[in-house]
Image 1 (cartoon, rainbow, N blue to C red):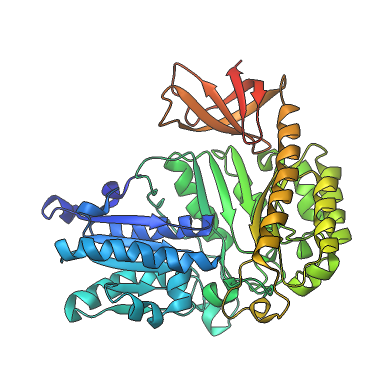
Image 2: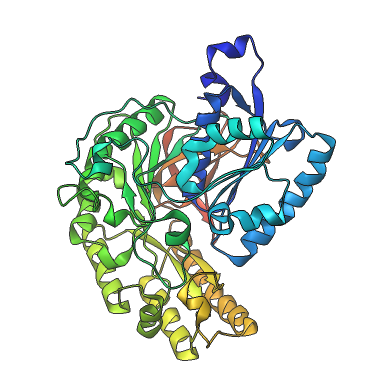
Length: 470
């Protein structure tokens, strides 16, 4: 379903306004952008892929790295020039930078008309109307007390009632039907890792109801999705604010039972409260496939403790053993930070050792970046930038070797691939993912998008597999 397909009937009388949206950061931001597009579609906005003809330009921002704010300011500088030529164009900034910087950002960039945090997305229409009337910048930051689809009893403290809600599939960022879609299952985080800004930009954990999530998933499947990824800052703690009767494994079983769903994935899973029951579900539920993202951040117990990760390297390896007992061929990816304050060469060596032991399918690797309001930013033993650079290069070299070895071992195997899209640069070539989340490229004379097909793997590199249809 495209944005234009969900515009109100009055759009036939009044042409739709155009919105251009730019999304940075995590999958949760992508899902938030789709929610905002759905809200704007109800207000007679249609998606455009260029800011040049947009009535509203919306920047959905990420604050996970220090450069993020500078990137936003740089983009706002370009948009300021565009707005001078087109004074009717409105600029909105959403996401974590909006929440973290608030009025400071408005002071730095007065060309912003709308500023809203991720917990205030539903207020976008009100802010637009408010700005239209006053001509002044409108702002909404802070955190929601409950999810917008949940019943009012959650706010008063009464017992939760799981009422089914009819939900339309949100439009996609591309404006086209997409095979793989995201569903947010919770907002916020309660963990307060010392390096992370999420609790300060997205607030405390608030879980949606199972019925609400299932209803949205059904709508996405009707609109053409074959794969759904459930999103949360820590999906393992899903439902903890609803009481002991709601567990993440129960949600997974409910969504997996939907007949039109081919594959079900989730992210992110914090290892400290990862359970044997969740690991066992990979043996019981085929739609989960053979892949999980399980961030560890460091292999050093001393650094993990300073990060406040609530897990040791040995406990992390124990969780890996649970997963491999349930699904011996499971592929695991992770997040790793190098150069965290106080990290010694011995600490870094422990990270390299953990990577060798687990043999991650791939890793998202980062140099530590201080964030305002986080404890780690105030630590006095910051690691020099050149040391971070050198360690990151060594870590990436190791991970690239392991990824290449794992992918090369796939040559000759037959894999089921869910095809996601046709290459824009190479028409006739289609990309999809195996059960183990490995990217596969195949040449075909027919459209493969949305199909699950058997593929013989013929070649590989560190990032992808090549194959032929069987």
